[in-house]
Structure formats: structure tokens, C-alpha cells
Length: 353
Ligand SMILES: *Cc1c(COP(=O)(O)O)cnc(C)c1O
Image 1: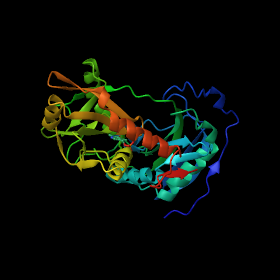
Image 2: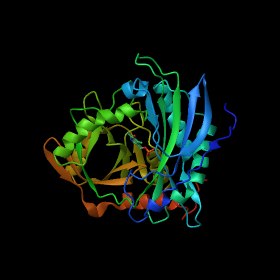
Image 3: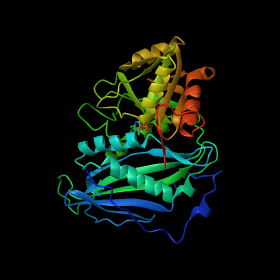
Image 4: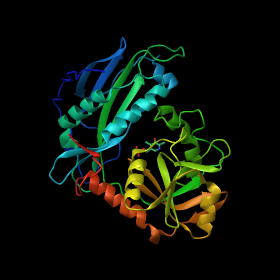
């Protein structure tokens, strides 16, 4: 266990906060003034510091550039009606970072270090947390190997960083998705459960092919027979058939989303019938044909809820009735209201910075 170490803070003399227009935030292009860094050397995290956001330099033989020894997290901070800054479930992200870390031979980032780094960084850059409706500050913690070594072995040195960027009102247009039956995102024994950089690099080509066919996104299926639904793009995916909320169990091939878990918790509290079990492609297609597939939607931090309008499978496209999106609209509002402190947070999910 690391003691609460002091974080050295070097404030920028040139804040870029004037570049932030809350009503028109370009996604992922404008980063807040500061970033957090810590280095893992000689078996411990050291040199905790916050510096002006800037480029970093790495060796051309950097082990991560060649072998993707890198993991990340994604979470958001919101401004509540009192003007305070609250982060949604950061401890859950700290725990998941370490699940990813173990799989990639990356050392644990103690939860106390994660929370202290996040708290100090968000405090310093709190003016970057927008307050316009549906805006937030996206927080990106990540860890990567820093060895200068092109042999293949676990890295010995690492860097833990956090950067943040404001994100705008993200009205997620209903998306058209294609059930992927050729490529796989994950397989038993692989790294699907980890938020590891390489997973995303490998997903780009199949997604590009689907986009060329007019789809926004893929629904990934199991790597063995492509018979069971796993995730949608970089989100978990849920279905409402008749009045039951159905989603695949979080297994070795599925990323255990914090949004997913939050939606399931609220749904159960509301008395909605919830089933976490393997979801056969056949079952979804049959329900769509019979008009029993009421809703389909992705769930994840970026969009929270991304309603699905059309599902493509084997040269057919199944359209969902958009007048039936009752559950997804209701759960989106509930989550927004909890995160921004509009309703009571009875689950203890929000963390005040
Ligand atoms: C991050 C991620 C999710 C969603 O997780 P949240 O914690 O809800 O943001 C789902 N699937 C994949 C593959 C992801 O990378």
C-alpha cells in the first residue's frame, strides 16, 4: 500500500480555458490545462506530479509503441446544480483498471493513488468541467510500459497518466448496427474483459467494413461460432424482448461496463424483469421478426445510452419501432439525474471532488 504521497503541482502560466465554448465543444480535441503523471520504477510508483498538458517523449524502442502494453479507463465528471463537481463511480474504474493491469503484466495502481491523482487533477482543472445541459468532463486514466527495449517480455517501467477533456451535449442519434459474423473482438482466454489498447486497434478494420456497408457500428458475437451476442462497438448491449431486459453475462470476452452494471441495478430496483444470460443471435432476429423486440441499445460512459434503430444480419435489415423506446429513455434520464445530483444518489455512486 502506498502512503498518501504528495503530488507536486506545476501550474500552467498559460491557461487555455478561454478556448472552451461550452455550447460548442469539439469531441476529443480540446484537452484541459493539466495532466497527472507518475512513474513506476524499482517496484514502486514514484514522482507523482501534475504538469501543464503537453507532449511527452518516449524512446523509439518504447515497448508500448511496439507491443501495446497499455490499458486505460474512461469516466466523467459533472457539475451539479449547486455548482459542485461530482464524478460518477470512480472507485469502480480504479478497480477495473487493476483487472486490466493484471492481464497485461502491468503493476497495480493502488486505489488510493488513483483517487488522489484524480481528485487533485480535477480540483485544479475544475473550471474545465462544463455546466451546460448534458455536458461533462471526460477523464482518461491510462498506464503504459516505458521500457526502452524491443525484446518481448513484460515491461519493468511504467507510466500512469490522467488527461481530461470537456465533452459536449452528446445527443446520440439512433444507430444502425450490423451483427458481425466473420471477425471477432474477443475470444475465450483472450483479453476481451480488459480495457487494453490492442483490443481497439483490432476492432477498427471490421468496423470500417461495416461503415462501408452503411452501418454505424458492429454487434460483436462470440469468437467460436458467432451465435451469441456480446457487445456493440465499445459499449455493452441490451435488449428488451416483450417486457424483459436481456443482456449477455459479463464473462472473459465481455468488458464489464460500469454503465451496464448501473442500468441493471436500477432496472431491478424498478421491478423490471432482468436476465443476464447468453443472448442468441437467432433469438434476437426471431423477436425482431415477431415484433417482440421492443428496444435495443448500447450502454457505456461515452454516450450513456445509444438507441439502436436498425439491425443488419445476413443481408437483411430489421427495423425497430422508435415509438417504443420507453425504457431506454427513462433509464437515461434517471442516470443523468443521479450523476448531476438532480435526484438523490441512494446508491452512493457519486464522488464529490
Ligand atoms: C469501456 C467499454 C465499455 C463500457 O464500459 P463503461 O464502464 O460503461 O464505460 C463496454 N465495452 C467495451 C469494449 C469498452 O471498452
